[in-house]
Length: 169
Image (cartoon, rainbow, N blue to C red; front, top):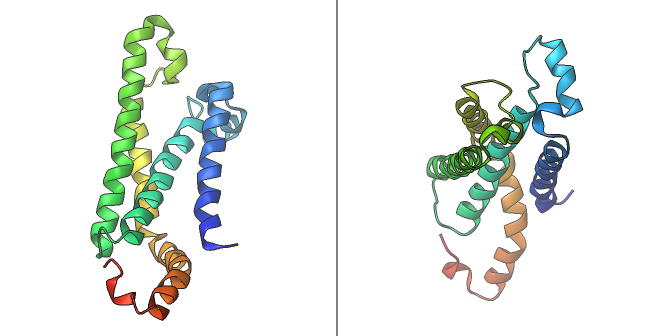
């Protein structure tokens, strides 16, 4: 598997999570019934998988852009900004849900999939934060190796042309 394929694979998995949730509505996705029964939960937790991915995948994409384009050089700053981007996306999505609730009135519960949970918005954002944190804390070294493998050929070409010193920091 090439380094780019790993991130593309995660983006594809995230898309599948969203497609499945949109097909059934998140409260009715069959994959969520098993954990609901096993953990004796009062609601289908499938939407939390989606929000976890909503943190994980955008954080890795943001981190890759920040590191590969040379916008930041420190790992901590890259991690902080990647989490901020993922949380901004999550907050934006929650605002869209709120606007939909205002527009749809009584039909909003089906669209939102809150399943009667008054803290759904907060827990959705918390799961996005967990995903983004895992992306930046636990997957950073693997991600750095993938970025280095992708950048190595382009850096070697710059070095051969004598332009390696002009590469963005």
